[in-house]
Image (cartoon, rainbow, N blue to C red; front, side):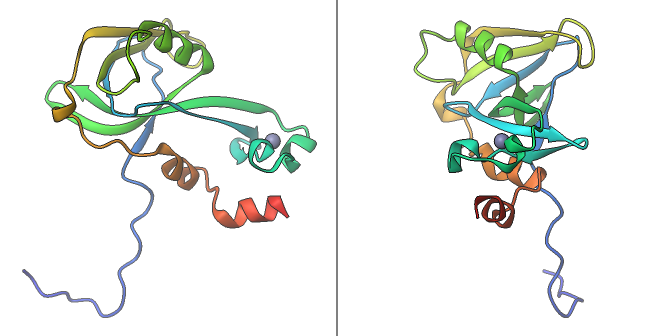
Length: 169
Ligand SMILES: [Zn+2]
């Protein structure tokens, strides 16, 4: 092992390693779902960025009172499968996309191990989601452990504990 040539602490790694994926292509991307259940959350969209909504956790929310538009998204910890490349990611779905996915896995106890192809009818934000679940599943023994998407999202959105307390008080 090479000796360190630094005195003092190295900086914290910037940002999380796991990426949030928003599918917006007409060519399907294949995902293996690691999460048992989707993680859904409301948030506010204002000034070109997302802000926390504390309505559910604190019964009241300053951003709701301000009338900032609210959005809702669901998140699933997945592996993106493309050719020989397998990459962990968090897939973002709309309410409609999640409903489409749920309707195709009714007989399964949860999402884990499900293979799904996701695309859009049109490229970009205007296209509707096309969700196609494969009959074949990935066996449990071949699946990585699932991670809670929440900490990754809170880091990406800059929702730290300080913000939450500030809003709560
Ligand atoms: Zn709110």
